[in-house]
Length: 359
Image 1 (cartoon, rainbow, N blue to C red):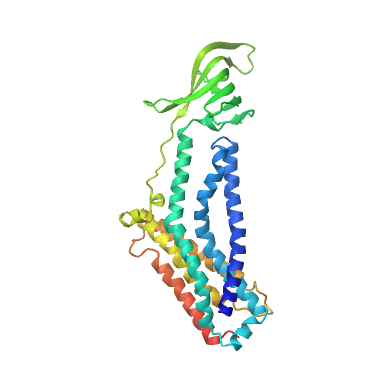
Image 2: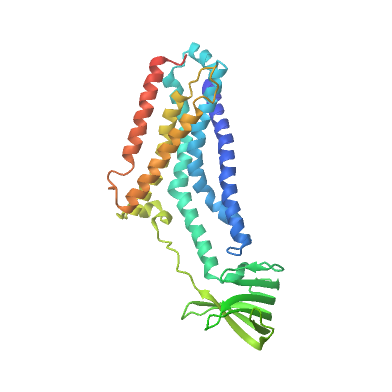
C-alpha cells in the first residue's frame, strides 16, 4: 500500500500540474475570443463567465487524457532518473505490477472523462447554444455599452449615454449609418434621439430600433447642404432575425437520445463519447513502457515521440468522427479499428517492456 500510494500520488500530482497548465492555455484562448466578441458588441460581457463554465467539461474531456499520459511519462521518468525504479525492482515490483498500479488512477480519470463526455459536455454545449441563440434573438444594441462608440457592422456606429436598470431602454442615442441612395450616391445618415428601445415584428421577423423625440440628418460627402427630419417616433430596421440555430443537432443531444437515433451523425457522436474514456486506458498502457528512460538521456527523452503518438491517436478519432457523420465510414466499423490498432501498439510495447525488465 505504501508503494501504491507513492506511485499514485506521483502520477496524480504531475497530471494535475499538466492539466492545470493546459486548461489555462485553452480556456485563456477561448476567453480572449469571447472577450473580443463582447468588445465588438456581439455578446454581452455579463455572460462570459457562464459561457466559460459550460465550456469547461468539453475542455476537460480532451485535456485529462493528455494530462494523464504526460503525467505517467514524467512521473515514471523521474523515478528512473532517481534510480527509484531500481529499488522497486529489488522489492519485487514487476512491469505488470506497475501497470496494475497505474491503472487505478487511470480508471479514476476514465470515469471523470466519461462523466464529461457522456453527460456534462453535451449538456453544457446545449446550454451555451441556447444562451447565444437567445442573445442573437435580441437586437444588436442589447450589447451596447454606455458611453462608448461601437461599430455594429453594415456601416453602423452607435452611442448611448446611459441605459435604464433592466437594459431595455437607451438614453440620448446617437446612430451614424453609411448607405447609398437609389441612384448609387453615397450618403451618411446621422440620427439623434432622446430615448430608444428595441422590438421585433412577429410577422416579418424584422428587428427594429424605435427612437423617440429626435432628429435625423442626411449628409452627402462633399456637399454643404443636409436634410433634417424631426420626429416624435422613428423606427430603424436593423436586420432580420438570423436563422435559428439547430439545437437538435447530434452534438447537443443526450447520450440516451443517441442510442435511439440511427442517423450517421448520431452514431458518430455516440462512438466519440465512448472513445474518450477508452482512450484513457489505452494511453496508460502505452505510456508505461515509454516512460522507461536512460538516466543519461533525461526524463524528456521520449516526451516528443509520445506527444506525436497521442496527437495521431486523437486526430484519427476526429477524422473517423467526421467520416462517420458524413456517411463515408459505416457506423458498424466506426472508431473501433483505431482503438484496436493503438491497443496493439500498447501490448507490443508492454511485451517488450516485460521481456526487457524494468532495469
